Length: 427
Image 1 (cartoon, helix red, strand yellow):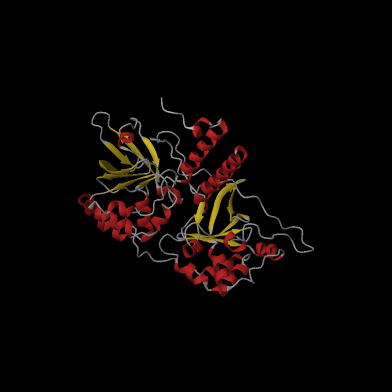
Image 2: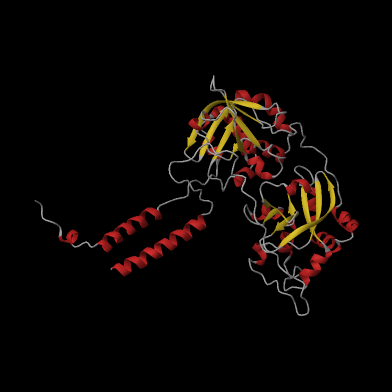
């Protein structure tokens, strides 16, 4: 019998557990997020039969930022031979309309071949990226997947009974379990109510925003700030395409702000412009759309200048009215000042302060002699649109989507510290 290694014979239970914890640390340290989707076109580049569809995706840079925090999706692609008849129609669309059409082909759920062939006869409703924009009425931003139990043919269509748009699944092109699935279909899918004939040369409304605010009588300060900053011309230039939604603080909102330690006038011109752009969404959202918005976190015009994920507004419904949370203050929509597609202007009860400029905890206390200024609690966020009506697949074991690398690092740091303390105590 081989002699027993003295080092092994003297291992005590605490020391054994210490080795186990060190092994756990090595394992968790090398753990990476499930997926960081940054470039779908790279996945499609090796399939020349989908080059036309790939070119459409490449022409819309905003899709990259839309997908930057997604960890599971299915992309529906159309082969060149099937897409050729629709290319003339896609060329007539404005860039924003084309982007929404392509978003309708990105399903926010990973679907494998077995998932598709396990679809019940009644079908399964799957949310698309288009639904998250808030521009899809009801569930028109979703697709219904059905399977013929006799032929096993898989059909994808709009959930609306009045829609004639549908496509048949041709084949599964590529999978990155359980993150990305690419499926080819035989037709371009069009959301119900979507105007595929909309022209990118649609004339703008030609609205004088400053005049509209002056006519509203309660927005003199905002009208003055917009005119002095020069950004109003940029807003009016954006009236075409997807349109714009302006949240304009009332004169009393500016009066309340002046009673605090925060001063907009002390900001440099570029920061002041960012604050004003922070009050504008680059899409037309009438009141009904705001009240039923699917994706509560909305980018602003300032987001387009400063980068994805920054200068966003959280829009929700609180106590029967539309609430807008900037991360610092919560304002409510008080009135509709102007509404004519593609421009809508809402009056809001507070000046929206971006945390990127004023910090997360700015001093909002009153100056001496003022006691009416408060800071509302942020609204409860709506459920994420990624929670589709029926989930078709799940990875073996626990599948937790890592939405934030920061949160994961904090957890690992805490675990490392706990293990180090334990090791020291055992030794």
